[in-house]
Amino acid sequence: MTDNRKFEIVYDTDLPGTPERVWEAVTKGTPGWMFPTDQWPDVKTVEEYPRHLVSRMDGPDGWFNQLEHVLEPLDGGRARLHYVHSGIFADNWDEQYDGASKHTEFYLHTLGQYLQYFDGRPVVFTDIQGPAASQVPDGFVRLKKALGVDAASQGDTFDVELDGVGRLTGQVDFSNENFLGLRTADTMYRFFGRNAFGAPVGMTVHDFSGGGVSEATAKAWGDYLGKVYA
Image (cartoon, rainbow, N blue to C red; front, side, top):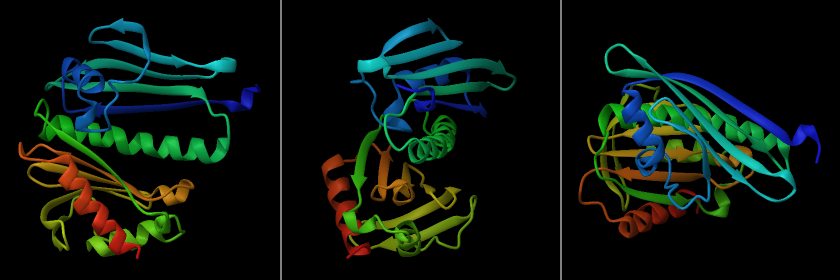
């Protein structure tokens, strides 16, 4: 093991929720904005509600993965989050670090969207992976074009009809070369251009409508992605 396998990703952001609500979101509410983490074998090495939380997983040969959240209350029912993700990458250090650091910005942005628009609402979470054919240099560009939002910027509205998925209307809440966030009145759609990091394009659906069915969502979007990359 060498020191260059270690990494640390630090991110500071203000969030539209009290420290108590952010704490709830990053502990019990992760399906609403990231992915379910309730099965992670982590240990809470620091648990000072609602200000300081450190979760850590350890493995063989000194491997570890650690998440730290430091929360400070702000006026107006908001909180400042100091986030530190540290650990060890065993392989492809540069590519893994680049991917993890860019994912951090997108996930924490999505956390803010969740707190502002859907905090505490029951969610149906669905993860969908694109086919191997999406793992090409222009894979994410092709998806954004198919969605009809390739020229859209963050804050723009969208209204699209997608074959097999249906009509989606809402706001583009995040858009850059690697990630896309679409938010409707009751759902957040997150698209990940992981082709830039050596993996297929992926997406998650966070459905707060009260009527979501994960299996049906996975099939509709899986079929749609199959057509995009056919």
